[in-house]
Length: 183
Image (cartoon, rainbow, N blue to C red; front, top):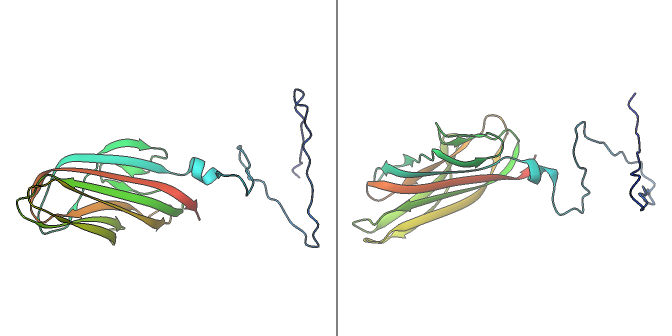
């Protein structure tokens, strides 16, 4: 049987008090079987936010075809706190189930004619959500799209797609993601 041990700090002068509330209901507090800091529900940070997967990757110089959806290659990893982003596939497959804020940015150099530029978040190989902007001829344009995506922590993945009005060879792109709430 495990035991609870309270060890005082000899250099501290304050008291640490555990007080039960005035309740007629029995409550159980379960401590995790891991080393770390236990935070209360009134703390302004949580352990999931401190330790959840987060990443940022970017790409440049990719040629993308006009009028069709193109997988965007973000092969330069800026950071990846849990080794969940694969630069060879440009996919983020987190190892913690939960809700993730995903942001995709796509920048195109000046187009020769006005058209739409669509920036997609794909989940498991299919369009999850997108945002588009009307691109005016002769101007560099970017489209930024952010959404919250539930990922199961084992097989679900996200990636970026883009659909420009015409073929361009010097795109710039960024994809980022962070766990905002574990399941």
